[in-house]
Length: 241
Length: 254
Image 1: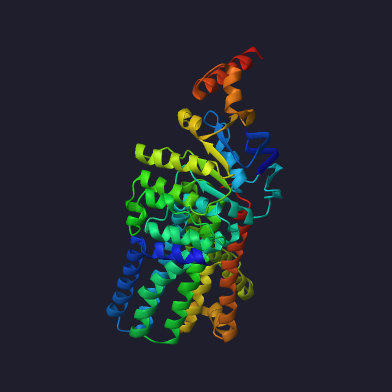
Image 2: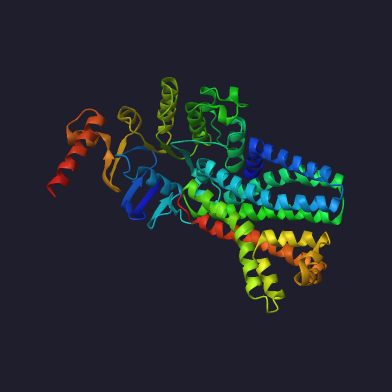
């Protein structure tokens, strides 16, 4: 469970996050949606401790994450772009990350097998295509069965078969009392994978509730249309002001 | 340390490190085969090493830091502290560059010319590697822009190899009426490359070429105390930028 309260962040003159309040609970999966540059990645990086907020606090499972790193045992993260040291082998990457984790009790190698990465563990990272690197990132994120999963554009760059494998995996894991945070620009994916929507625009959370409620409110059947309606509505409001 | 194991393995397989090793090997062998006097050969080698080792260390480290940016991001998402990641990166690069130097210079020299001055040359090269890798971390952490960081790194190199010597000469020249021994000693301590140079020059017994100040240096650096002093200062030159950059890295937004 993640509690974000009054988080502010600015890069120079640009206010990226404006007093963000949010709660992400176990057993739910959240779609983070927003236009480019709305602060999605920055918010994720704040939760991961990569970006330090100017003010406000973030708690993971009841403990503040400031000056702490052990909470990251609970988190699996799949980055938007995964780049690895060129000369490392796939097997070595997995070995290294395993060496770093203390909690080895629930190793989950399903994805490694399904993406058949185990059969190419001697391949060096610089010989891999972008899609294969994404597969490595995805397998790493799921490897330790973490309570909290943060996936930044998980399906970008993957081939259709891999996308289906990954989606099935997410759906299977979703029901195990986890927290999922997924950003994506592919609404149909999010419609399948998530139960809640967090809509960010210009560093503010404008909507944070279930997808069903969003659809009801906007009278649309598809998530994509519903989001588009909200975006247009906001545009009109800002024009009025 | 677990990270360092994997990362240094990765760097050691890098083609650039292999080229650097080969270059050092060729230079060492050619210096000793061109000159029959081992003292002169050591001196020529010294001059090349004082230029090349700092340049390669600082540029390679800066480029490597930026190339591993996404990888550092991935490590930051793991349950490890930023300090651990930072030192792992520092040690990996230092180990890789030192290995290249040991294979390229140290081992051949032990066979070609085993003497006190050779041992000092080997030590000086290693210490300079540590110093300039640390300075490169300072440059890398200071900015998010790769080109800017390489610029800063090169500026460090220019400053310590060329500009600083010019400044010292200018000071000595314009204040030549005053006793300057202690002042120049202090000024030399502010440049790691000069520190390395002076130990070896004195060990090679070329200090007579340096006049009165040379005699003073010989008195000071020729003694074991002088060597300890300069080694100590080279360690300061490693630790100061390393720790300053670490403080910055720990608070940096990645």
